[in-house]
Each structure stands twice: as structure tokens, then as C-alpha cells.
Amino acid sequence: MNEKKILVLCTGNSCRSQIAEGYLKHFAGDRAMIYSAGVETHGVNPRAIATMAEDGIDISTHTSNHVSEYVGVDFDFVITVCDHAKERCPVFPTKAIQLHENFPDPAKATGRPEEVMDEFRRVRDIIRAYARAFVEQHL
Image (cartoon, rainbow, N blue to C red; front, side, top):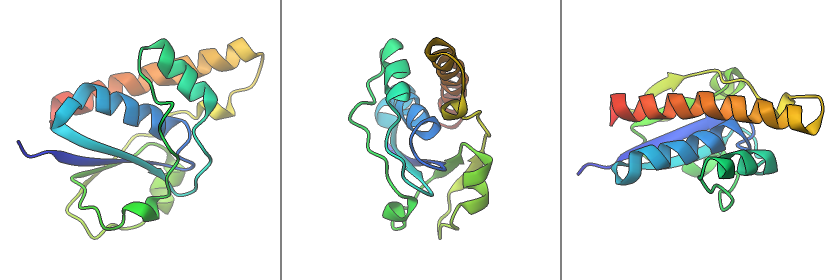
């Protein structure tokens, strides 16, 4: 089987790209190698880890990586998950199909702690549906 290489790119590689990496790994299984990176690195957001754990997916060992770490990887797909990353995305010398989806940033949520977690859950569910559809369509 020809394993696809997929890069999920976000601004800080802390929330949306980490959630997407978790779900893509979950849905793709051994059909793809999933990477995530940011145009900056902010560390993995503890609320992203918590909200994914609620759905049975462990991203607690994920690391926040800078996109420059993957310059030599020949990706099949590059998925930008926020407009800022799309604007600042380096041009990869690759055959990669580039896809873009501007997911809301749950890290910008305000309010009581439970309201912030509700926003993380809402965004998580949007990204889960996107990841499932991506795997069904492309893998």
C-alpha cells in the first residue's frame, strides 16, 4: 500500500492542527503518515488535549513543530487550517495537493472556563467531521 504523507499546517501548531492530526491519524490508520506544524510554535494547548481525551483520542504526546522541520518531506497533501497559515505558508517544492479550511480558533474563546471548553468541543467536532470526510474522499 502506498502510504500518503499529509501535513496539517496552522499558525501556532497548538490547537486546530493538533486536533486535525489526531483525527486524521484515527480515521486514516495505516493508510497515511500525518504530520502537523505551525508557522510558529506555541506548544500543544492543554484544552485541546483535554477535549480530544473526552472523545477517546490521546494527543498528549504530540509536539508543537515548526514547518521548517519538514522541508525535505515529499507530502501528498498540505492542509492549512487557518487563513493566517495559508497566507504565510512556505511554498513546498512538492507535488502536494494544497487544501484549505479556515476553522475557528478555540484558543481565542473567552468567558467562563466551561464556556471556553464548549468552544473547544464545538471546534473539535467541526474538525472531526472534516477529517472523516477528508479520509473518505482522499484515502
